[in-house]
Structure formats: structure tokens, C-alpha cells
Image (cartoon, rainbow, N blue to C red; front, side):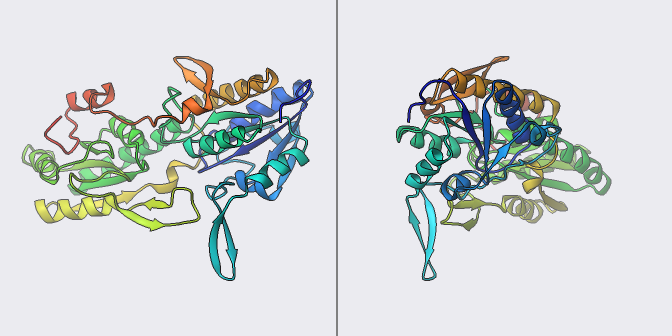
Length: 368
């Protein structure tokens, strides 16, 4: 499927979970594309639209004024994997391969390149489509910030802002009622949101998937604070956090998703255990999809725009199979296959962890 001659027509989709900044990327792609005489097809609902043939033409008027808008004007889905497509027959759901349909629609639309915006799952699918011959360019999106090949993914800063603001608000009610407040942030396997949000919001305890915690260490910290006259404590826990020799709290299993495990409930468990074992009044709050909603922060608007413009530049230069990536203050590009080779996880010796420990944050372990 090598593009012959000049690139004339591009397709763009937003895969996986939504997050602030998606519309800014769409705008960052479409505006320079139109200025270079390209036509732009917006593929609806992520890879679902690529398989089912749902798309709309995007004109300048469609991307005007969307820089600060949350969500995505194209819609998104985390159930549209062409290689893991749920198909119902006689009341039974089977997983089938619909990648050939995706390729047929790509050809039928007359696309020269597909720009896919998404996280590690989206990039993995995009890489497999590239191996089948599709011309692709990737843009890294995930609030989890768990793609190793880029210093930062757009959406993360906005999610951290939501967590830090929520912690600011919980501080006032926690101090007023002398309670322990437990807040659950997103983060299945990577705890960057809880870590950065917890530091920014002044959490006293931060629990991460990468650092299994000890219950006694948590009890000890909140009791110590109470004995020193600090009549409240704030605990920020990532949804994938788990105790030593324990397991993540699984809320639901959805076989229609490429990753069927849906987490949720760790904040309630932590709050209950603290209350039972310390006698301190404890409440919990689950932020959930609040972290995905709303307008992107100024930083994410800038980063998203840079990513979008870089993606169209890669397309025009026919540098297919590559992904925009932030390196320092500049957006460069890397091979998509390299981008998904390793997940970026929090390490116990990361500077952010060491800084948090230095200002008195507990990670629920006596090892730090």
C-alpha cells in the first residue's frame, strides 16, 4: 500500500479512552493538511469506524474553535480492535479478525496514510496494520503517561490537574471533620497520575501499582499524623495498586475488550481497612472519568498541537510507521514498534518518588 506520488488524502482516528487534547491534535493535523491541499477523512469511533466504514469529511470549519474542547469530535472506542472484534451470532459472542475489512475501507476511501491517535493499545493495533501494508503515523495519547518512547503523552497533565484540584478540595473537608480521605485515581499498571497528582495535591500517602504496599505501614503513618496533632490524612491511590502478596481489585471482566480487565474499588478497600484498624473516621472518593473529561490544560493544548503538526509533517514526508514523541522540549519521532516495546512504569528510585519521600510522603512501605 505504498503511497504513489504526492500524499493527497489522509485519514485520522482517535482510539482507546478519550482524554483532553484529542481535538487539539485533530486540529493540529487538519489545518496544515488543508493548507497543503490534502483532503482529510475523520474516521468515527476509533478503529470501529475503520472496520465498519464510518467516516466524515473534515473541513476547516469542522476544526475551527475546537482547541479548548474536551473529548473528541470523531468519537472513540476501546472495543474496536480489528484483530479482536466481538461478533454476536445466535446470542453468542465470538472474537474474530476483521483486519481485512479495515484494509478494504482504507483502500475504498482512497487514503494515502492513516494517522492514529491513542495509547499503547492503539499503537499496537496501528503497528499490526502497518505490517499488513497500511501507511500509518502514530500520535501518543494516554493520561497514564506509560509510553516509554516519549517523555510525556498529552492528556496526562490535564488528568494530574484534576487529581491535584480534587486533593485541594478534600484537604479542606478532611481537616474540618478530622477524617482520613482516600482518593482513587486512574492508573492500571502505571502510577504516574497518582504519583504526580499526589505530589501536587499534598497527599500524605501515595499507593502505586509498581510499589506493593504494606497495610501496617499505612496505619502507622495516619496514626503518627494524628498523634502529632495533624487530625486528618490524605491518601492518593492508583486503581491498580495492590498490597504485598495481594492482587489488584478487579471490578469487571469484559471479553469484548482487548484488555478485558476493568479495575476499580481499591479506594473503598483501603478506606475500610484504615477505619477498622486505626479507629479513625475514613471516607473515600473515586475520581473515575472526571480525569478524562473537560478542557485540556494549556500545556496539553500546546503539546497536542505540536504532535498533530508533527504527524502531518511525517505523512507528507512519507515517514510511515513512525510516531511523534516528545524528547526534552522538542517533538521528534520514533518507530511505532519501538514505542510499544516497553511500558514506562514508576521505579522506586525515580526522582519524583525520592522527592515525595523527602517531603514526608509514605508509599505504604518501609523500604523507601
